[in-house]
Amino acid sequence: MRRAWWKILSILLLVYTVIAGFTTGVPEIGNLYQSIRNFFFHVPMWFGQLVLVTVSLVYSIKYLRNPVARYDVFATEFARTGIVFGCLGLITGSIWANYTWGAPWNNDPKQIGAAIALLIYLAYFVLRNSMTDLDKRGRVSAVYNIFAYCIYIPMIMILPRLVESLHPGGKGVEGNPGLSGSDLDPRLRIIFWPAVLGWTLLGVWISTLKVRTVMLEERQLEMADSKPAAKPKQEYSAVK
Amino acid sequence: MKKDLLLEIRQQYTFYGIVLYVASTVFVLYLAMDQPEEKIWNGLFWMIQLFICVNAVAKSFLQESRGRMLYFYTIAGARDFILSKLLFNIVLMIIMSLISLLLFQILLGNPLQHPLRFAGIVCLGGCSLSMVFTFLAAIAARAQQNAALMAIMGFPLIIPQLMLLMKISTTSFADVIQAGEIRLMLLLAGLDVLVTVLAIILFPFLWKD
Image (spheres, rainbow over the protein chains, first blue to last red):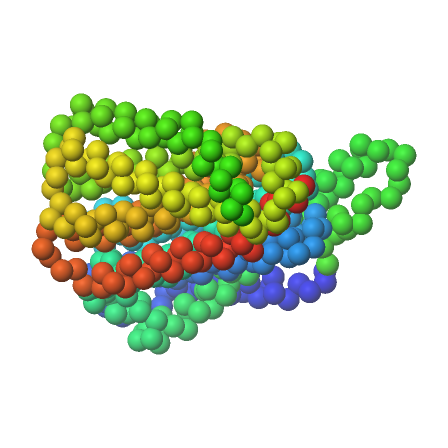
């Protein structure tokens, strides 16, 4: 296995996150009590999702600059894992919100933002599936991916800061101070950042596995299609 | 570029079609709602704007025949083409917005305290709505799809803008001064600039076929 160290690192970090996250002493913050432990699972999902869709964006740009089928597969699969992480983030967030804010859904700007993100990327897949021509599909969906990302990211950066939010850092709300980054409790910090890294690496790992299976499937189809043609297309050569 | 605009303007039947669409929608709303209160008025107004925009802008790309596109391709570059489309749709949408504002005032009552300010916000809103949907229409047209795909792609992207617009426009219903209103306006304008830049950069990729 080439370059397996980051996969091992991911597993180690996640094992550490789970064990330490459930056993460490946590500070008493507002009405969070023990539910603060969700912090190690909920927040890294968003970090992970952001990283994954950003990678997807990068591959979309690369595809437009140089239309190689491989980049398109990368962009798609990273966006797909991004959706999975987004769903998980919403679920963990809803469970947490149910206990601290009283209801799973509070029309909080960040919840709305997360839902919009899911809709955008689901629309990306609808758009992809509506086209059959491979080349055109790659190009059009890459354009949409870039366009959507560029509108969406500024929005989630700016909007939650302008309107009232239950999340920390919102306007007019002091928030739960333990979560607001700069004054993060050191006991939380030593678990939180490894957790972010671990979950993100896991997301990348899942995506690369998906990319590899998709490429192998494509190659198999190609081989089946043209039995006598011995040479598989260069673009689909396996990921390094 | 001027030629494109002229061509569009000569196709007047679509223009009147949309005017009729606006009028009948507002009339149906009037029959259904009579005179709603401010908040509902505001919400309804922006929702109607959204649907007018989808319909008006969808026509601009989805109704072009293949031959016409090829013709445009020969006479104008991709950038000129998308710019003229954007410009035309902005003008169209501002006219439509003002018409629907007028109809809303006549039929659904007038809860506005500052009609002029609201009209300004409506123009700004019409601009940004039409820009986003123009570009999405270009994408949808490439995918050989109907307006449904455009709605699927567009609605999630437009929600933040609509929220912003509704927030800003609440200021024209009463004398409350909302903090950071100018900042919200600037944000909206900045978003328009962003969409234009993106459209100019990305459209050539959609164009070559």
